[in-house]
Length: 321
Image (cartoon, rainbow, N blue to C red; front, side):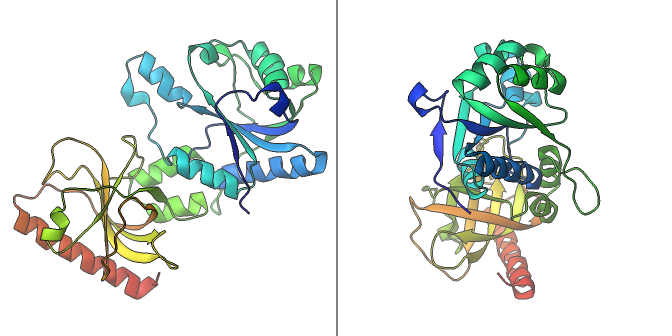
């Protein structure tokens, strides 16, 4: 189910502060644990005639603190870009997303003000669902016990959700998804996400090098903190026709031909020459074939690219689209 999503970059104006059922989190990946949480929010919203709403932050609080402390290595890799996150939230049934800016004022807000002023008044929360380990307020001083006490004072019914686990009993979390992607295990990532891992973006012009090697590619810019392992992948592309299209893609910085360090997803579609420039395309990563390499020359690179394509064709011959 996909709903029409209303997005607020700050607390809604008074006339738009609908009483809401809310959950709070970064929701990176919108994985199966998040989906279970959202399902409960939507059920409560329908039962109590509230708006199903998510409060999330940009940047990620950990990214904010990594920046101000000059520790970029502490900034978490990103599973999904904003477009894909919002799409997944809408598919899960969310109607409203508060995309609040995490800044100094937010970081220094007291736990009491966060609940009694921001949640109760600014967002008009009437029903709230959080994880059992939820922390909030300046220096994370607020816990679930305090949240329930403050919620009772201002008419917010506070509920908690214990961890969601997979078939083997392992906790489903964004950290688990990031770990799978860092290892190139996109099958495990798909199991945790409940759908294939992919990236959505507009196709941009590149250097046209693939055409000269008889392997034209669609180029898509990727977030610098992309959680997926760099390398060569079997992929399928959505958005260029009625059916997904098979191909092979390179995710990385193209060390053989570039030195600017910018991450790019270059996708070669099989037996198809389509004008994709400017189109919004989703590319799903189905299998990691090998890591990114720097080759000594273009002929060696070309031979590796054609070998990668043959491996990808073999994948589709076995598994289908």
